[in-house]
Amino acid sequence: MRVNDGADRVKVYLIEDDDAILKSCEQALMLEHFNVRSFKDAATFLSFEPRQFPYVVITDVNLPDECGISIMNKVLAKHSDVPVIIITGHGDINMAVDAMKEGAFDFIEKPFSFERLITTVRNAVEKASLIDRYNALTLANAEQTSSFIGQSDRLLKLKQQIAMLAPTGVDILINGETGTGKEVVAQALHQISKRPGPFVAINCAALPEHIFESELFGHEAGAFTGAAKRRIGKFEFANEGTLFLDEIESMPLALQAKLLRTIQERTIQRLGANESIPVSCRIIAATKTNLKTLSDQGAFRSDLYFRLNVVNLYLPALREIAEDIPLIFNYYLVQYRKKYDTPLAEASDAVLRYLVSHDWPGNIRELKNFAERVSLGLPFADDGTGDSDDAPLTLGKMLERAEREALVKALRLASGHVVDAAGILGVPAKTLYDKLTRFAISATDFKA
Image 1 (cartoon, rainbow, N blue to C red):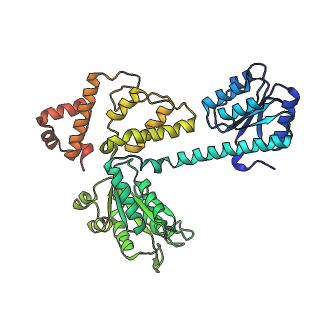
Image 2: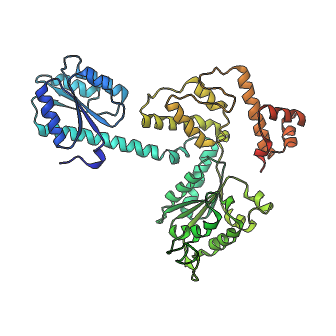
Image 3: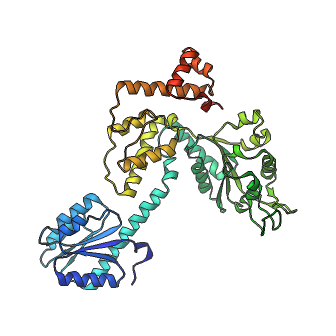
């Protein structure tokens, strides 16, 4: 029986010093389509040192240069998920039992049939494949899972809101800075709601204005030059599901009126068509800016804002849930160390200092990238002062960081107005201007 597709990528490493047994076992495994590689002694195998899981190790317990149990212990010390099969000689049952207690997957006693070998190896390969697929799924879902890690009051409240709102089907507006996980929360709302239709995401900032209407509402053949055939728009495709409109503030004003009518009437018209098509999809919009401010400035339709703002979810920035940063970081660090097969060591003191001192303007996205660099043992730069994790964090540097963070916080509170920020900090405006120049901070970056 051929090994299944999910296990095809699992390598099998065979260590046996008896040439006849080595060749016969290798041939039997290859005939069953296992990806096998053989070694005649422990030294050759250990010098090869496989690094990429998944794989299975089969080793004779009695090798001329090293005991098979020792090989097993070295393998498991590096990759604890590796199934190790021990081949024992007659009368070595006690040793085999001890090996099982120490972590061996199974043992085969000489002389053994090829059926016994194939069955044992197949079971080991299946286990390695399942673990590998689980690890891959865990990493793929890291973004979603990490958004709900943490025990701060704000995150606990957010979890409660999501659980309460998801089944209702109400349209929702999500507010949050870039990198806070707005699409992740939208996906969670969709999944918990158990709506039968798909989750459809569209980034309003990424679409050229001339194709925006066609993307949302679709078009009939011949509706415009180049429209060779009918196209289903995102609204229609998301029927019975969820339509996620990210960066809604970027939607052209001309289309905002049509979106408002669609949300109110729950019908759409394809470009070039006369008939209205009913759609039943939940609308979740997301913005990184204050839509009320844009609406007051005439940059966003006020009627659309009030229609979208029935339920508002606010996603806190990382600096607002500082107590959760180590938990989220550690989650990503574990996932990336599994992915890259790097040692599961504790984070260094420099990493921990960086976690608590950095402002994290990129939020979870930035923290995730930072965890990936740490998992690979790469140096990391700080917030612009040129320090790395290898540089000592002196008192002067700590005071500079604290001062810079205070300036940034005051500017955020004052929406970029320097005079107001100076009042918050209790310093003259000229002093604040001097400090902004020193730290290369632009007040305009914080204007609403």
